[in-house]
Length: 60
Image (cartoon, rainbow, N blue to C red; front, side):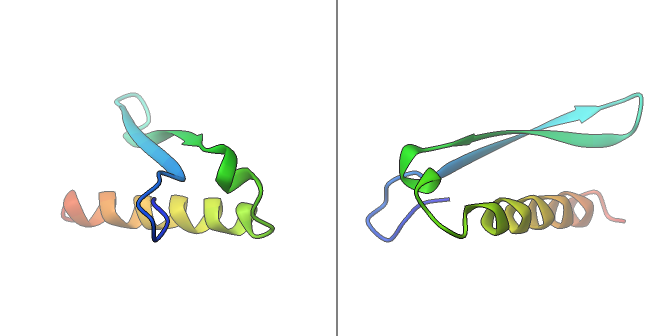
């Protein structure tokens, strides 16, 4: 996720777990994102969107 200036706010990397057939995500946030009041809801929405995208790519 980037801001309007193009600065990275968050990086999310998926890691597929074969034993559970699910993805785990490594999330890295910038200092700028840590200052946002809505940081927690943004992280939750990002995780939801990533799960939705991955399920659509798997053809479920």
